[in-house]
Image (cartoon, rainbow, N blue to C red; front, side, top):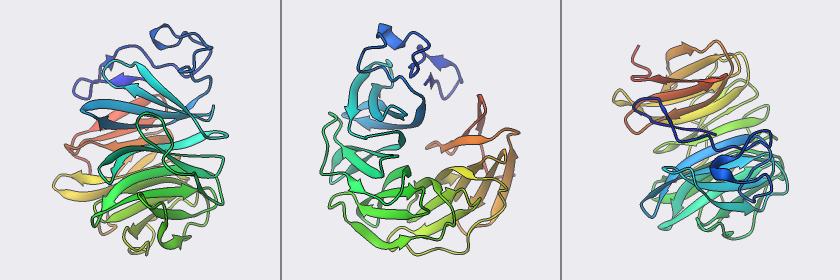
Length: 283
């Protein structure tokens, strides 16, 4: 895992290693609890007590917290019984929290000291993606699973909100929370949009990808709300809030991750490269 300067694209510090084949960051040995002997499947960023943090999840079933500016590993969280596929950082009831989901069919929530908040939230399939947001004054957690479901949870009571969302016909790989919507993407090659308060679908599925959808982001760019999807078909598709296709960005390689910054820039990870776009959807 690496940290990059968003303005220049230059790397910041040394890699944060999660593989035993190379010397780990800041001199840790392979026996150190902060050293992850497997691949990194998910990362998320947040700000806790005025300090930027990175949270990562990997195949060793652990969640790790790092200081973003120094790369120092501050906490290793053991709780999942197998691979962690999704992590998110957010707030609920004025409290910072970390959410993780994994192959053990659970979503788990933690405080920033790595202590569990409540019991694991059980699912019926492997949890491939999680997101945290606030919609209509309510803090929510969203999970997407390999058994085709998207679920919305009250982040405080941990009870499910609205209906069980089952419109994907294959596994869900990505979820994102917008101002009043949830977007999901899956192995059925579709992007689907939901009312975050009720879980009801908003319009028809967004179609066009020809391979599984791996990544979703929701945000604003060029003065409008947009949905961004990335797929194994090597393309990034940008849609407006009404589901109209605005632009297709050809990456030539499978797209693994997409992210929208607060200033509307789009970052795309495809193959071994990360590309940046200043005004996505304005073509």
